Length: 471
Ligand SMILES: [Ca+2]
Image (cartoon, rainbow, N blue to C red; front, side, top):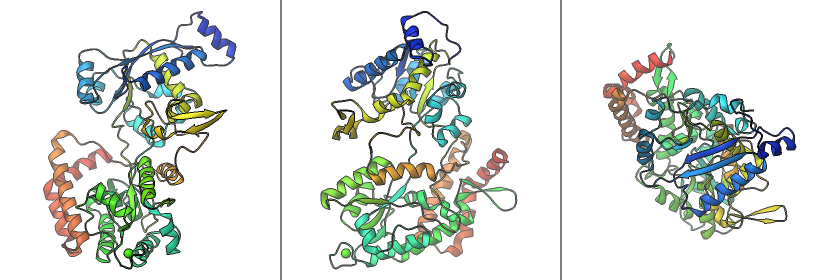
């Protein structure tokens, strides 16, 4: 399948031929570098050794060599190593990749992925979109998103069912405010809060108000920024209604994530948002230390006048992930390794960790151990592989499913560095005015004043530039 390989009559190749139709055997050393995945970490070494053994079973003779870099200051240490000319075959970037890609030493992943058996089906829609814009980084992991959860017993007590629309969502927050669901005889619960920023609410409400991208068509053939759009004004009007009706915690903008969680566990708010699937697991586990057997319900993004969905996702490039050296002499082996990691056998290793530490086998049944919570899949979590047993409780599984169901690609692009000050200043103006509109300290009659201030802060130049980029 990897046509650049020279055929050699090795025992390994004969073994793969005997399997009949198995992938072409690859051989060689793959030097790889990944943060926290080093030769002094016994779990890393055990993972690599069983991967090599499984590859050998399939006829590959691939030696994986770990390059050790410090976890602290990883991106800088990696940059120094690469610029010195020491370029491993497989490189995990956590920033700093663009200047390396500019030197033409990173491989375009796309033609390689197309020839794989499993990897091509492991990608998520956001991976494909990002690779098409920037083909040097691949990060096959589920998306993060802000998604709301509520205690299932509270949802049941309201008698309302899971909200489908923004009206339903408002009704749920109202029932939580009025229902004394914690039973202490006091009206002391807000519908929802946020951990310091409206971003949490925006995560599942922006598309409901028609904010489906960073740049929106302005109705006269041009583009406008979502921050000053009519859709943004409609959304902030709704937030202001939540605020003035006592449905949104008035301290949403000053509290941190710990205070947010604390209010949730102690019944001071009913709905909070989670930013990753493991957060849903943590919320449910911590809730159970106070209220045993209480499960959480993940709420779908409610449908509003402008649509439905999760916040549009930047697809201009991956911000982190795997790159292959264009100078590597063992590209076929690198791709064979990654294709194995995407295969059912590789995914079992990636997602269930090490036997005896992270899971146990009882016959052919796998049993997850608590330590699995501390295992991080080093290579990838395939979009298409289904684990033999549930890895996550139901609301976290739904979280993952919804990141795909409600995926929306953004049209955001990176501005040249000359525009950095304008980007900062307009974002600050937006944050400041959004808070004033929501809290009622600015009236919506002042919307035009806000838009003028946003444009004066550099927004005009951003819009002009976007007009050239987006066409
Ligand atoms: Ca109460």
